[in-house]
Length: 604
Image (cartoon, rainbow, N blue to C red; front, side):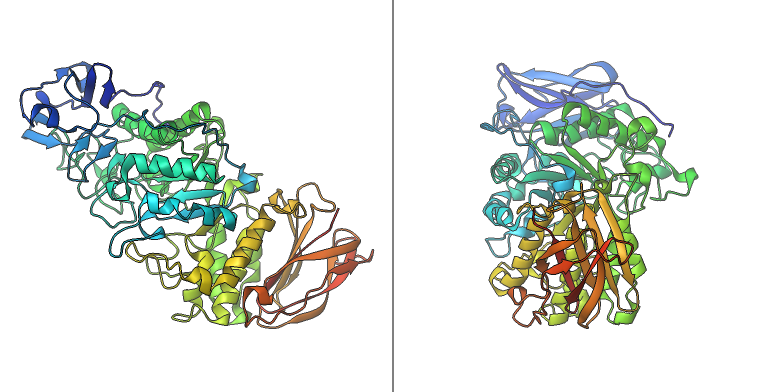
C-alpha cells in the first residue's frame, strides 16, 4: 500500500530531560515567535527562562536550577498571543488540566527484570480496567497499586497476560481511558508513572505479561492542550498535531492526528516505544485501527483511505520488532481484514494479532439466543475454524470485552437472562461460550470479572464485586480448570496449544459438534472437544476419535464442582475401537449433559 515513509530511527529528545547539569527542555512549536518555560524552579515567571529557536520549529533550553519533581509549563507566543501549555511529552502531570512534572524515566529500580512473555499459542489474556478492577475506597477509582494486590489471584486463575485499558492521562477521574489528553503521562488518579512501573514489576514476578492499550486514532477530545498548540490552525481545526481538513473527523471528535507530518509521526512512534523502553511493557493493543487506515473506518472505500496512517502502523510495528523482539502488537480493526497481520514486507500493517470479530459476534449470538433450534451451529463452526493466513494464533478470541459488555450490550449472563445472571441458564450458556474461547485455536481473552459471573454491563464507576469470588466459586473453578487445560499445565492437552483443528462431527438437528485439536497428534497431544448447545442430555452418541484406546474425561462443564444445581450428567472415560466414524479411524460412545462442553485426551 503506497504512502509516506520515514527514516528517523533514534529516540526523540523532546520533553523535559533531567541530567547532571539540571534539565533540558525541548518543545516543537513551529509557529511560535517566542517560547518560555515556567515552573516552580523560577517561581512561575512567565518570561525569565526563554527557549532558543532551533531547526524545524524546535525550541530548547538548559535550565540548571530545574530538577526532578518540579512542576512546569510552556508559555508559547504565537498567532493567538501567549498561550500556556503542558509539555506534550510530559511523563507526569498533576492532572489533565494541571501542570507537567519533571520526571526521570530511568530512575526506577527494576531489579533483575528479565521477564519473557509466553508465546502467542500459550497466552491467556485478561482485559483489565484499573479504575474498576479493585476499588478499595468507595466512590474513588481503583489504582495500579490496588490492582497489584490481585495479581496473585490472576496467577492462580492461570492468567499469564493482562491487557490494561488505556492509562494515558484523561479528563476527569472516571473514564474508560479512550480519551487521552496527555498521551505520555500515566493517569495521575491511577498513581502515575511510578505506580505503573510497580505494577509491571509485580506482574512479571507473578509470571504475568503486561499489554498496554494505546489510542492513536484520535486524541482527547476534552482537556486537550495539543489543540492549536502553538496558536496556528486552518479551517478552525486543531493545529499542528492534527489534520486541517476532512481527515480530522472521527466518531470521537475532530482530533485525528496528522499521520502525514513527520513530527506527529515521531510523536506517536515515541509514545509507542516509551511503553516498552521505560515501562517494560510486553505488548501494545491499538484501539480501532480502522480509523487510522481510513477516514470512515471502512475497508471498501478507497476515496477515504489515509495511506500515511497505514505506513505509520507499519513503521511503528517494524520498530517494535527491531528494538524489542518477542513483544506483541495487537490491532483492533473488527473488519476481518487479513492485511492487518501480514508482514510489512508483503504490504501488511505488521501486527502480530488482531481482535477477531469473526469469533465474538457469532459465538455470543449462539449462546445468548433463547430458542435452541435457532442456534446457528454453522456460524459457530466457522468462528471456531477461522484464522488469518496460516497462523491460528494471529487472532484474539473472546465473548466479553469492554466494547461487547457496554455500548448498549451487557455481560453475556445478563444478555441470556436480564436480571438473572445467577440462573442455571445464564451460568450454563455463558460458560459454554467461555469454553469455546478456551478450546478454539486463537489467543483467548477474558474481560475482568467474567470468571465471577459479573452482572449488568461495564461502567467506569461500577467496580468488580469481589464477594462473587466466594459466591460463584464453582464458576471461578471452571474458568481455572479450563485455563489449565488450555495452557497444558498437566501435560495431557498439548493440542490446545497447537495450530490444528478439525470439526469432524456436525449435527445441526441435535446442535452437537465435536472437534479435534492437535499440535503433533498422539497421546497427551490430541484433544477432542464435544459441545452440546441444547437443553437436552445426549446419551449413546457414537463419535469418531483419532486413535483407539482409552480417552480420559479431562473436563465436564456439567459437573457438580461448578454449580450445585448443575446436573452432573455422567460423561465417563471412553474406550474407543478401530471402527471408523465421522471420517476418523476409530470411534466410541459418549454421553453429554445439556449446554455442556466435555474435553477428552489420552495419557502417554
